[in-house]
Length: 512
Image 1: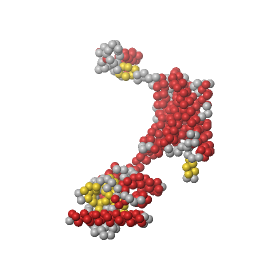
Image 2: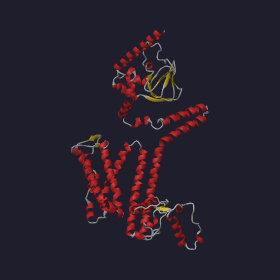
Image 3: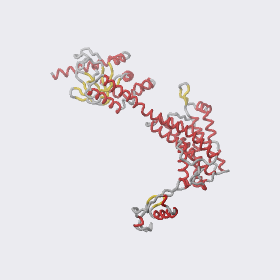
Image 4: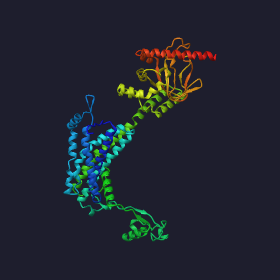
């Protein structure tokens, strides 16, 4: 059981990394939130229990990471001793050791010393690994990047807000006023909602709940007695309103988070600091905010650029094509046909996925395996190739070329010399009022140079695209280049071709 190893690209390793990420997020969230007295009193025991749970997770992770496979000189190392030595040599191993030191035993001496768990944050390097693994696995990488940015901003705002409230505690915030720099309840009163019901519960009548009669409104200079005016307004709204009450923690955290967000994004609009320490903290916070804001703007810009890069490149080509057609005075009908082709190509992914770029990037063998997975079944449907050996089919698959035909375009014309065979990937083509759909093949006999064929290598019928059609094309030269290495397959193909030609000739005679 202890001799297992984990590939970092495997699902079990990813799931375990996800659990460690949850532990890191828990510590990032709770270490500083305990500064709020209401949270400390209500959830302290639960916090201690969850601390033990995630400390166990981190301890197990120390062992799991010694069973992480690694690559050395291109070889996947799976030996238990090799993996252990490789991990011990890594600086992250010592971070893991420091991370699980029981520094939170200090909580027995001082219950509100939640910062004693700061060493648990050394594990946050695993958050980067979780991000990298998720970005590789997810089908929505741009959405994940946005989520990651929001998560990062939330954690920074959260910590900064908690530090701000801790400073407010040191300054005795219950006695603070609205104009003080520190937290004050005057800055976040409970909202008052217009609400009234003439019933026994409210002890009001229908007239007392009428909202169409307002007390007279006067400008400030008309107030003879300001206190009396306020009292009259309170009497009027007393039975016509309801106070929505929030807990102390909600008010404290909401205002602290709001202050943090405004300060870090350099919006300001807060009371000025009252002493040197507050002023120094505000300056440091603002400088941190400038850097953070620059990073956020840069990340958002990079994400938008990445998301729109394919679209932008595609539109550049489209604009160049439009300019070229206008410059060359191409007929409007042909211009419209070209533009419709661009629209189809983008909507069906052709402008978003460059198969040639993928083929150039991937190792030849790996790209070949992808191509075989995509095309092998289709190529086996071709009668001529159904008994060919896999290696020949592999060679032919790598030589397939994708072409897109517009509606009513001729794929080939009757009498043309056949130099290619076609496989319908998507769409349909029409041959003598007969439609050939996805997966069908035509033109295979014309590329074999079969002796005795009365039509030679010429096409026997017109083939037109019904709508937009995606066809895979195999040229005669590519076929014969592959057959040079497979003489037995060449002989078998020629025999099958001769049989097909004789059958077609016999059918023609019987109809005549």
